[in-house]
Length: 118
Image (cartoon, rainbow, N blue to C red; front, side, top):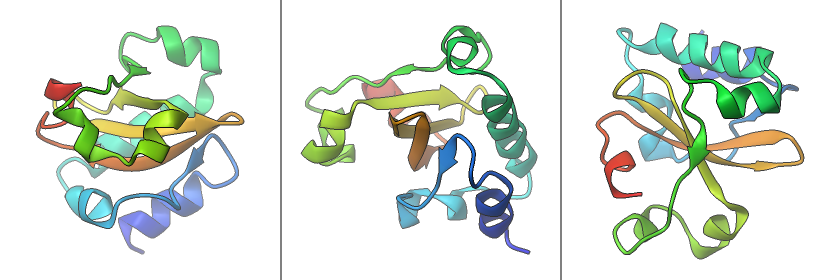
């Protein structure tokens, strides 16, 4: 089973929706070396309530700010929804937005490219 299929199946019906993920910055980014870290972070996120997620030091869940450099990563429509990010590992981040208690995953960042500009 592919990692994408495993993760989308394992976490469907909970706090995650992977249907909007960017094909070029999505599951193809995750290699064997870091796939367990992604699964562990998604599991932790899933198990905590939203208040715990907001204050968890490990996840470092917060708003991703829009500026000239970061603007190009998401459409204006998505920016209006309020882009959030959380930490998978020291280097890896997961970006998306929340709607009705669901975190819609938009893309991953494995090299701080996005994190450093927003």
